Image 1 (spheres, helix red, strand yellow):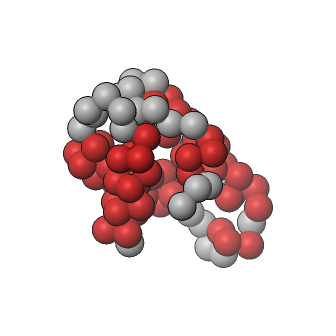
Image 2: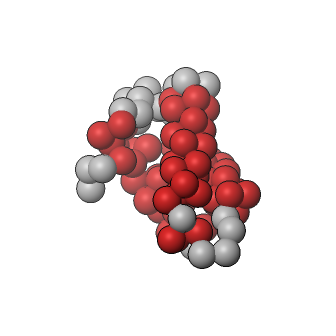
Image 3: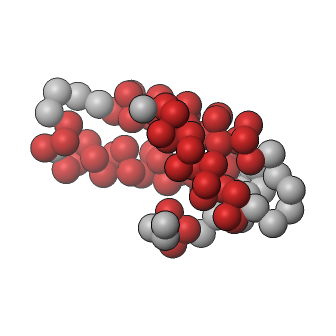
Length: 84
């Protein structure tokens, strides 16, 4: 699963990368952190618990926009993750 996350994130970061940021290393770190976030919130039958899914989404958004965009400087926008 980590490899799939990595490739999806790398693709999105590369498409938003206009300033020569460290796409590969940041994608690897982002994939690992996102999987950790999901693991921390995961409970039995979490796919049927909308409140748990919302907590995961909020934590993932906080990381993506607070760290990946604001701290690491990647040009992320909310619509970037819905484009393919």
